[in-house]
Image (cartoon, rainbow, N blue to C red; front, side, top):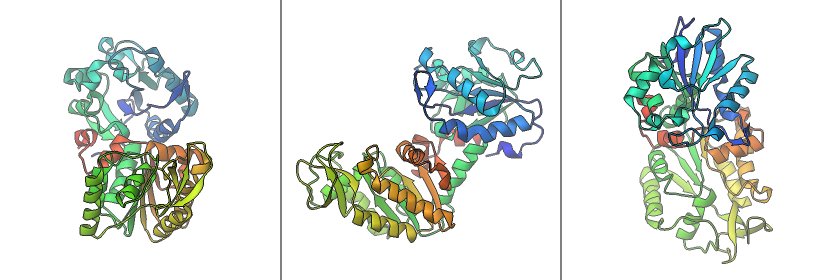
Length: 392
């Protein structure tokens, strides 16, 4: 995989740049600019190299149809403000555009093609559509790691027609994930949450042989608590998971990886109720588990102190209510504390976890924070991502 940072002579070259600008919108306003902020270094690098930039991206799932609410126009305005450069949105059908349609004025440096998912050929991974797009540029750069688990035309097919490179953000993502899966500094710990074990089972199975500790928190921990013979009341859980849990526990024993799940919890009768501490064998039938308890928090903090590398994916509880955010906040603070004195290398991923860190204004206090959801998990599963394969 060749990085664009090492490419010489980009002056006046038209760069077809695939980004993930799929940001949350409310009434045409961007509510979280994290994904935009992360790709600014690549854009600024190309601007400094005097390249001409033609951006491909998407918002939402328009399913091959024009949907006004999913236009990239708000992104265009946001990029213009952040870069201090004119950014022009091209709404004309890409099949009717020619290469010489762009960059005719000396001050034109950045264009964005309208939402690439307005074309059904994008998700169909259509080779001819990719050829049409490739005819608009001299080189291709993929800086959309979070889309790279999709075999879509703008991710997988375009590299067949143009010299292709990785962008700076994609490089950072891959390097960070390699550090926790290949170039490991031990002891290494994975703190993993979320509501469903089935979505993370392959991640856990792939990491167990490589990691020293797996810490289960969040909704999926309820399944482990119940598996051990405890009542979990009205708590969120995934049905028919006993066999999965048995497999995980057996694998950790075989691979000499320690597995931890909560010893005590914070419960309530509803999502907005009064928090109460419970041992895992004290949960009533009308209560739901909404956070980890103080003993469990202390145990996790000790595990973090004994670790050199941490992967964190999934909050410890229902952090949207401050009454049930303490576990997640304490985990974040302990990792940050160790990061500040260079005792640990930390990688965080997953939408909810990133949301939590944004609420704490703590995104910059970790070694790497990934905005990629599916691609992040599939890479951790050990899968080959189509976008990376295409660049290789």
